[in-house]
Length: 187
Image 1: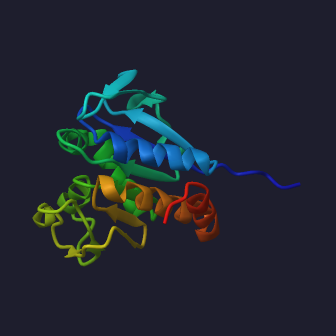
Image 2: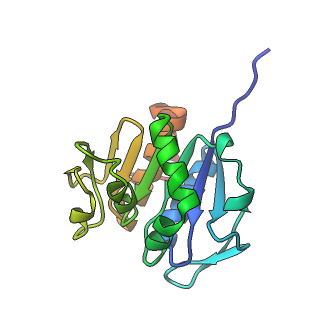
């Protein structure tokens, strides 16, 4: 008898998040059959993004079982990214995931969180244009998505689909990501 395992990802929301980056990931993961949890860092039931789109959360950070997650995802946007970085509970867990070899991912401005934490030292990484200095110690590259070891970084709203598909590939394999890309007519 085989036991079905469900991959589970926490996407962390703070007021002022970039809606396209966060919700594209949630949408693609759910289409792929991955449990994507919208997690409020301030435990609010709804969080409003940088363009005044309000999103209903699945849970708050205080109620979240981090041990059940396979990956932590940080969307960009301002001031959302700064608020994510100021959330000690989140940054402590990011560090723990990184040290344990569990996956972490960030898009747009959010890779700066990893850079400030020293997690990108000597590694290729990308970030929103003009923010490259925030990737402390990283080898800055300009690819849409960069994956090295257990870290994924991406550049911005225009790379959100590629970012989401990379997460699917990490969790379910390249063929699952390609199948999803075909279904959504992603070129």
